[in-house]
Image (tube, rainbow, N blue to C red; front, side):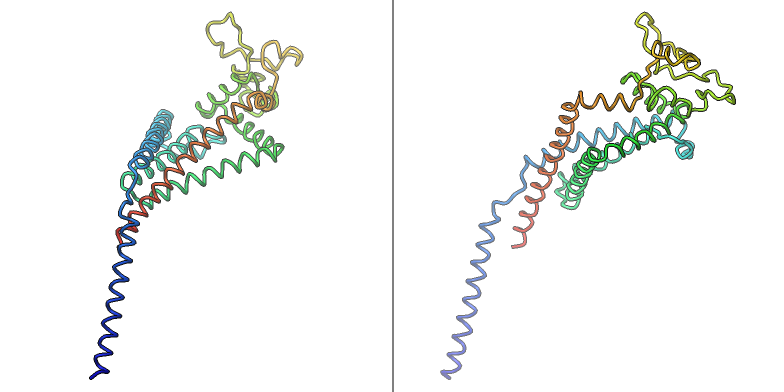
Length: 297
């Protein structure tokens, strides 16, 4: 009988100790997480941060789709694959898709406190940041390779100059802004069938250059789009009287050192915006995880 009482007391004491320990553990978790909550500042600041990107993505997509509809691409998507050069609208649409997707994920993730969407947003921003950093470092280390790739890119688009109006406007803007002509000089326009100087060409633009290569005349109020006709029939020594003779690659190479602080400032500003977005997302994720952990007890 005494043995049974002793066993009963041992079991009772053990059960009591377990109950007290569980109660203390629950109190500890209660005091640790009772004040845990999602910060409204971080939540709505991240939402505001992303709504700007989402709206910008909508604008880019709208402009890109409108440009394609004007060119008839939406009714015949094979026109994109038939182009030898690059269609600038494709770049606009790609930027629009990325901005729209990230903005949507960030907005919904912040409002709904969805960790999956917030991790997607944060991870993508981190990936883009390191890709930008890698491109900048590689471009600095392998300048000759970058120069050759840019020359090939520019020459391939010279060939397609008359194939796409957006590409044409892009090249014209580049040549006028940098006062240059061709990749390395006006002779590069021989790559285009309309400006080629060969005897097989019957184009009116034969041995000419686009009007964007012409030295502007301050006296002219209206742009003369035929100013480059037959220019390259003349002696090379007279070319600089009417057209730019410097290539666009040399022009860009001389432009970069003069504006290195502007370029660096833009890169730093973009990087800081990305880091700020990553900080907001990670802070909000931590708050949500703390609140969820508190609800388990």
